[in-house]
Length: 383
Image 1 (cartoon, rainbow, N blue to C red):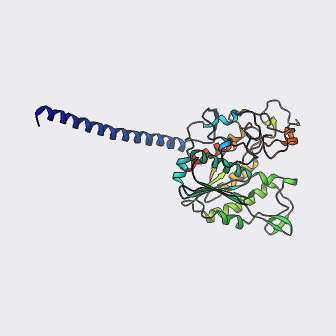
Image 2 (cartoon, helix red, strand yellow):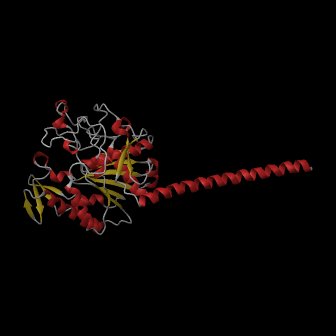
Image 3 (cartoon, rainbow, N blue to C red):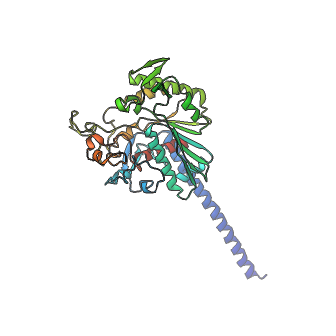
């Protein structure tokens, strides 16, 4: 080999080594940057109140379209049933002093491969369960899935990842039994319901609304407390007794090194316009969220803070093994615009014509607010 060809070959080898070194350095730098970014999120969240902040308009939302979701009850499918506005879909929750990660359905499935998630509670839990399935499904539109519908439990499976997400309906958490044609709410017993919760990897509970229902909406005929039947009692006393039964079962049966445990704060309703309209008369006949299209702002809780939340917090303070409280009550109270109102498949045309008395201002549209609950659930679970 002559000197010229040796010099050319040498320069080529040097360049090749530099390219390889640069490539390795770039990959390392990218990895370090990503780790630094995740560390910043983690550092932020350790000192961040996820549940105090404001709603920010964001054109990149919603995270999915209701028309492409495989599972939304007609009660929650506002766009299908004629809601004319769409701005309510565009709001993102921004905590006051940190940023939260955008929901990533593939990331969730990869982290949860082979595991189970279960929402336990009332129809607000079902609202959240369906939202979560929509969010995950949007990220893996071609994934093999299976839906198993039942009562009290329904399960949606992402077969490619062996992940199942279930909803177990039990509005009071404690057991309710039919005895000689009468519904008995067992404030001291949770044996039957709790059998379904054993061995689940992630459990998220909610309750609250059904404890205050009366008349045709009341879900029981008698309450059993200490072996004695009551036709009625102070509803907050009953809620506390039921929750303490649940708490004792959790403390005795849930290993937090094996099961991640969450409790959903009370989802607020918007039936009283005086809660958000300055100067509105509390005696007004209007009792509807109908026509509301934008969130509220501010840092003060609008209206009356739910008494059920105070009971829940008191019970959880006494637990040896308390759940993570997904405290969505304040941020949801700001969303008077996010309910189905009259745009619900659960209403007749006559009911839709009378929004002051028929609008659903308890549940939430999908897509919509429960997606934020699940984004915070995802954040608390992994970050």
